[in-house]
Image (cartoon, rainbow, N blue to C red; front, top):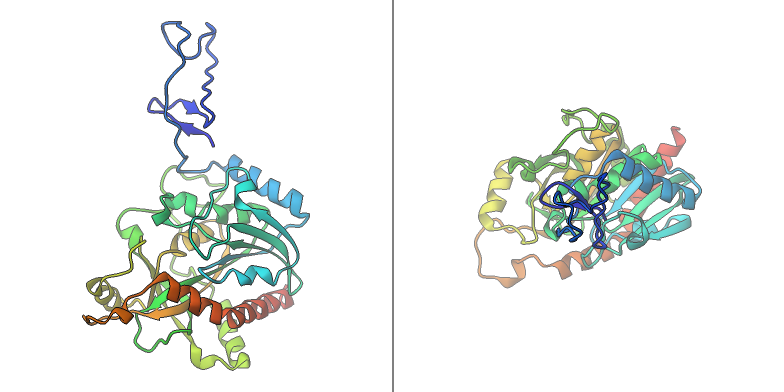
Amino acid sequence: MTGYNSNGDVATSNGNHNNSNSNGTNGNSNGHSKPVEYTAQELHTYPYEVIQEIADFIVKRAGIRPKIGIICGSGLGSLADIIQDAKVFEYEKIPNFPVSTVEGHAGKLVVGTLEGANVMAMQGRFHFYEGYPLAKCSMPVRVMKLCGVEYLFATNAAGGINPKFNVGDIMLMHDHVNMLGFAGNSPLQGPNDPRFGPRFPALVNSYNRDLINKAIEIGKTMGIESNIHVGVYSCLGGPTYETIAELKALRMMGVDAVGMSTVHEVITARHCDMKVFAFSLITNKCPIEYSDKKDEEANHEEVMAVAKNRQKACCELVSRLICEIQKGS
């Protein structure tokens, strides 16, 4: 992957540095042939042309242009397993694509059909706490856009702050609180490319109301209406789970569920005018009172276990909603 040294010169990760100077040197102003020393670095932003190359790579090999993109949250990778006629791309074999490092994220991109719609699904997302900048975490959303995706379905495993929520419930996101944004972090930092979207995108209607209403109706037909809620999600940086004081503050701000993903993906999707549907699977109840009980502490194993138990319901909800989109197209 191309990076830059401290002088701003382009550097490649194989250790070669080529600078086309007319005097035939390798970049030294004194004309000596000593190689230029540099440290290769990951790019924090991906130019439009690089995103287009990744999209072209996927579309050419998949043979279709997907209409719906799905991001599978922790333990929810089975959403991609129900895709038919699937073409599977391992992240490490996609040019310039990051690699997921978290348990429960398989690191595969699956392209195929679901309920008659062309779809692509990420089995594994990228998180800020893995060391990736937010632009890189949400870069696959732009890849989806240039592949032809019009709808983004983003799922996540989250802790329930709202006392009415129970483990295993599904919260349809209708808004978010961008805590990383409060700290000055945004996937849209840096020069704006208008081919993706405007410099200052509005986010007041980030989550598509029609899709939320359809999901509520689908929940009723599935018999799980008592387990479906509509609420506000917040993303923290992680990888630590929240303190009691942080959870109390979030609840005072109107947050119903908290996790470590999704918000920057939604921002990127809305920036490039994609319709967004997102939900959180509540995998643990967040304590908002101090206690010495160890069983009240969140842990990744619990998250994975709950997600596994609720995979069937989540898959059915997504499949039926995609079917509704297809009916209306």
